[in-house]
Length: 342
Ligand SMILES: [Mg+2]
Image (cartoon, rainbow, N blue to C red):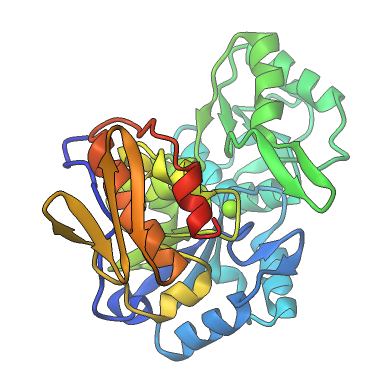
């Protein structure tokens, strides 16, 4: 990538839901967690939409169909239609359709979301390596996916059938903890076959392309909680991003982010869509946001002042990212983040 590395979060005088035409929202850790709505998510999304912003939901989870995801969102209080949900199953189905004959059979290792997406592209889902498939499609199959499905994939791949994966997230959050995700299942097949799949999901271009094709967004903003999928996907697609701290990313990870993982904006939760974003000013090598001043002194992050925690975090991001340049900041942020309760 030839673009210069981001060294601090941007400011925006305009509320983000007015500055951008479409929010491309990640779901887990942004809108809901373990099936329940995250604090302030529902009110913020309804207000952003009433203000004219288009909302689209972009998920690497290939198990559920867009209909099922939209029904879940509607039940939580964010009315959504299936057409507003984009899944990695749709992205991988398009990728496959571009490389196999029309109407081809595709061996499915995964769930209903993948089968529906393949049919939408005119492909025929089949269940056995003996069904003469033109491709193997692997997506998250949920806890009931049988071990024998991996064997089917292995038989087909050994015969030279091209292999595609919806996404490679190693883990998936569940109400009871962290479970193996599709990336872990892909590793099972990779180890057994020695092959490598073509992958569609975030942060790779096929997913971003699918999202832009389906939403027609002109000036989108990606909203996510993960640096290596949501924020990196925005970086690869050349669009702005908002990181919210309601999911898997914490303060130390954000300060240590390498350039492709640095979001345009950072905020506590989805209320950040409804406000402008404060500038981080540079004064004599120090970084000022709200009442806070951050700097690096004697190879340590320093934070002085007081005010809102997010302003302090933005100032610290500027100090850490500037110090790290094109790399990742190795300074310990624990002490200064504790001042902010982060
Ligand atoms: Mg997420």
